[in-house]
Image (cartoon, rainbow, N blue to C red; front, side, top):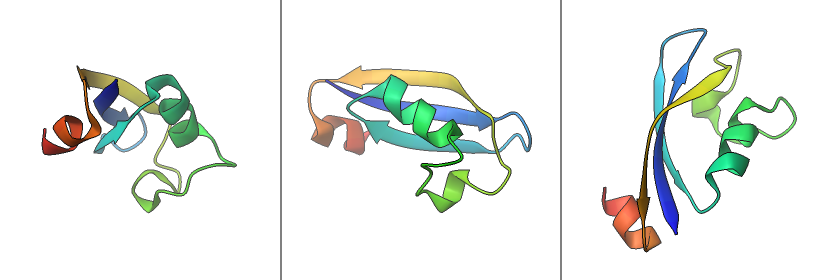
Length: 65
């Protein structure tokens, strides 16, 4: 199963949309100071809070959403 998710920064109010196979792990990565390869969610923008998620059978469906 694959997830499309929307996060909201509690610092800036900025929203971020992503997709993943492991939603809990991915949210933890967005909020981690050690593992945050995404420039969109780095540099004092967090903490990030999940505000929406949808589950799909395939990655292709999730990415199309």
